[in-house]
Image 1 (cartoon, rainbow, N blue to C red):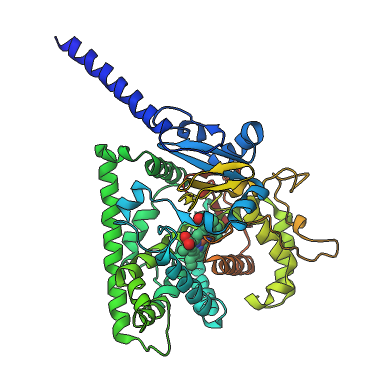
Image 2 (image 1 turned 90 degrees about the vertical axis):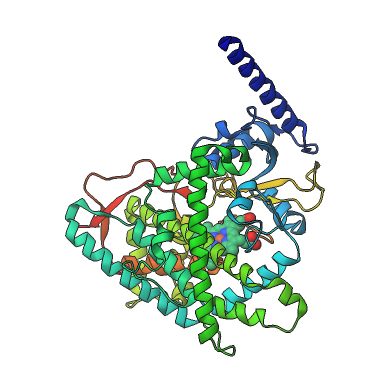
Amino acid sequence: SMETLLTSAAILTCVLFVVYDTWWRFLGTSGTLRGRNGFPVFGCFPLLGKNKERVFMNWSRTSYGPIYYARLGASRVLVLNGYEAVREALVLRPQAFAGRCKTELMKLLYEGQHGIMQLDHGPMWKAQRKFGQNALGSLGMGKRSLQSKIVNEFNCLSSTLEEELLANGSKGAYLDEMLWLYAANVISLLIFNESFDPDNEKWFGAMRENIRSHTASQCSRRERFLYLLMYVPFLKNLPLVRQQLNVTIQGRKTKLAKFKQFVENHRQSRDPDDPRDFIDCYLNTMDSKSANDRLHFTEKQLLYFMNDLFIAGTETSSNTNSWALLLLLKNPEVMKRLRDEIDSLGREPTLEDEYKMPYTRAVMQEIFRYRPALPCNIIPRKTTTSIELNGHSIPAGMPVIANLWSVHHDPVTWAPDPETFRPERHLNRDGEFMTSDHVMPFSVGLRSCIGRNLARNELFIFLTSILRRFNLEFADGCYVDDMTGESGLLLHPPPYKLSFSS
Ligand code: HEM
């Protein structure tokens, strides 16, 4: 009968479920590590909540110590907590921790592995990384020209914002769009030597659709789902998920086609002796005489590298700027002291002034400490060999998450008040700024962020320019109480609206 059929189907499903789960539980080794397996199939996912970085840190404090594993979907992932563990692994064993996990999701979204971020440790990644660091250095903020372009960019966007704020009065406006455009335009300037005004739908439309158009919490929910997909790949076969992924894949294709056009135009207009931007530098290396270079530097690689720079450099920066502003609004005394330091220069600060501005630097370091945009690597690293770490034996090929949050919120390092936003903690008795090794928003070791200087400079220009230009406050009825934020792939601030202060 129908009933027996259904019952048998249900029993069969359960048996398969358990077999599948047991299979994964015992497949792969976690060496001698202790850790948490969580639930069948999903592993620890149901336990992570909206702030996995905090949960990971709690587990290290209450149960397992700084180094443990957490099963996520099918994989046992090494989780490193606290400064010592992160340093011991990523800094002192750089090679061993320089791999990158190939997740199913990334294979699907990236047609295999290209670019830089997704590449595993090896000659291809090394070549891209070295090139990337040189190119960013030589095009980067060392050159005044890029700096003034960024300032210019900021000014254009802030004029648009000003109009909107004036028009809306005390109802205020969200800043997200502006922050996103600012960050995206900085990357565009770097890569194509062009930026895009908001009305120009050339290709921005497609990009923005991909990323914005969600409120922060929807955005982090969607991101949490993507994160789950990385580890529980069979979910991609569910029809609704498939449909969403197809939209994302289509978006990526549109983007890459657009990138290809930019590269074509650059081929026509470039002067090999005077590279204007990232594309020109890459094309120069593609022309190189060395057979090795010709192997590693291909057009496909270039297109994916451009894509990676957008992905790695846009949301992270706009997210940081958004936290920055929110933290200043919540801490008016900090905002005042910062503004005083900026105003004391008597003109628009430039990056060369930074070393004369200890309070500004302290505020920046505290923003990076207090709310890092990427609190624990979302695209995990991977061990390249089996190793001993603090008495644990760790297998080769194990995914690794460095929990930077736990470094930034360590109760001993930041005693007595790790959970307070307090820039003064980074100043010594004489009011001089102290750089801290324990603030590592860009991670450490061989796979740390290659955009860190650019990102820091963007924040500096953003803070100094916005404070000089505007006097802002929370819009009517929109005070933010809960500063926890939600983490999906990034740690997102709660949404907030601003208006001019009266
Ligand atoms: C505030 C802004 C930013 C933050 C907080 C940030 C943070 C990070 C972190 C934590 C990683 C390391 C991941 C790991 O350890 O495996 C990373 C990698 C990376 N970042 Fe950033 N980043 C920011 C801005 C940028 C910008 C502006 C760019 C581009 C110009 C960029 C390009 C990259 C690339 C290409 C990688 C991958 C490096 C590799 O795999 O070898 N980032 N970023």
